[in-house]
Image 1 (cartoon, helix red, strand yellow):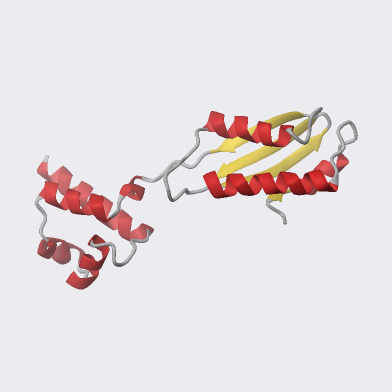
Image 2 (image 1 turned 45 degrees about the horizontal axis):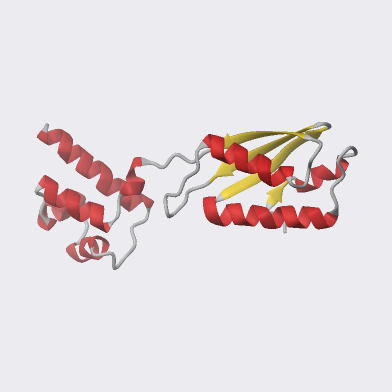
Length: 163
């Protein structure tokens, strides 16, 4: 399965041994967090009675990000079900969405209207053909990160020019 990097390091625990079945159940729990918060876990170190776990949150499409305290609490809760006697330390690395991640077709349409930007102006400024721009604006083609960044920073630039 290998949903938790370094999981086999737990096999050295003598005061709180963990069975193969429990390891499998722990990995299944990790799958829930991967799907819900895009959390990945890595066991960095085991030196009884201490365990160091790194919890890293990746980008979440639904923007449902957990804060650092929540990630630490949930990681301790998840591992604590199976490792009772150890002192679990968690380092949480949270995902801070980049400003362009807010860009979608609705945001783009609204921002263009607010700024008074016409499609022809956007076409001239970006050098992108009208059909492709229309496809992005109407959600017929999904915008990737570079495209979102282009629109975000272009509109930010236009806003700064107005001020």
